[in-house]
Length: 54
Image (cartoon, rainbow, N blue to C red):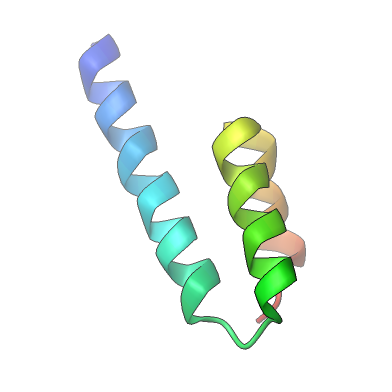
């Protein structure tokens, strides 16, 4: 079960980071968003989903 949750989290985080780098945000913002997703997984993902650049 833990492995499945870890794989699910990794997939979502990878999608978020890919999405961040495909956005039109400036490079500095992309780096900060990526670090937020990496270091604060749940909060970073939720923040990107709700307030990240569209």
